[in-house]
View: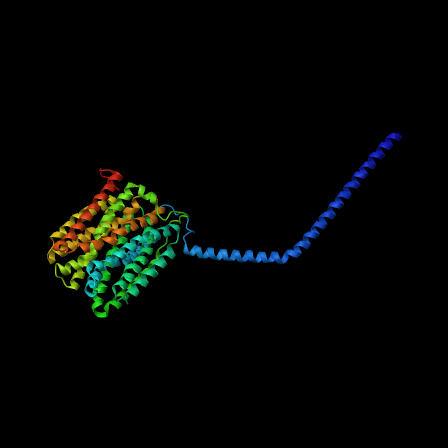
Length: 481
């Protein structure tokens, strides 16, 4: 019994010792935690000013970042989500068509009116016609070439800032042109500045329209391209009516005011539909691996090489060969542009019905035939008839050119880049075509005949190459393409 009591007492003693040790350990740990907490408080109190400074710096950086993000969201289209397939209609889509129509009127419509300036400059400047034609050729070259860069800007999401910069440069070119007196001044203003400005905002606007339409793309682009014809009517009429009364300066300023009013409306209505591509090459060389794209663009090179010679020198031909007055020669430029309005609409309707490339190749082949008939024109009445026929058919394939380029590939996210590439490639044709034709005038004492043969042959070669593109795509059998 005593032994059992001794063992119980011993166990109780061990429990007491363990409890005491545990309590002691807990107390020690609590003291250590309290001490550590006190040290943290001291350190925190010492570093509080530095923490507050860092906090204020982080807040400032965050506010700056948010502000820049808000600005960037207004200048770019990064907030656009994938909208799905093209709507092929609706108010917003047709507003893009209206905006692009004004863009074409103030870029290519203005360029196609250079014939009125070509004839006028030939009479007032001590320069030959070939030298003067370089002004319009440089304008076309730059307008086409800059398109590659502005097309990439559209794909990257910077439509609005690109558009604003281009419009400002074009307006500077027009209004400084109004005070130009010498050849180099007109080359700098009308040739270079308006070419750069128009090239910056022209391609992005055309690219936007292409992304809003698929089944009706041919009709939409055809409607847009009628702005080319309207500009080719409006600007020659302005020059013809105002130049004799108010002079060159105010005539040019009126052209500038027309640009201001219409291009402000474009900035309001045109909106990109597709989200931007985060990365992408400046030039998509893979496009030229497609035989269809390469042949189509090559065919357009020879076509543009010939076409602008006609538009630039048709007034001079009327003055020198048909012996028309300056005012009457301007009627030719109005006719060749005005007849294109129904032609472009008809070509757009037929393109949606029969295929863009089919209509393009047919129109280009027919135009090359009509080009050769210019050799037989020597009197006033036949010249008016020829001008109307040529203007009608040339407008048909001109209106389909952007649609044809886009139809060569299926990736609409690269529409701006590849359209710009095509424009840049054929820009060299626009640069050299009119001066080459002008240099051929009078060779061998044959008047305009050498230039006419060169023009028609170049257009025929372009028709053959684009026909090859169509054959590569669908073969010799009839098929909508």
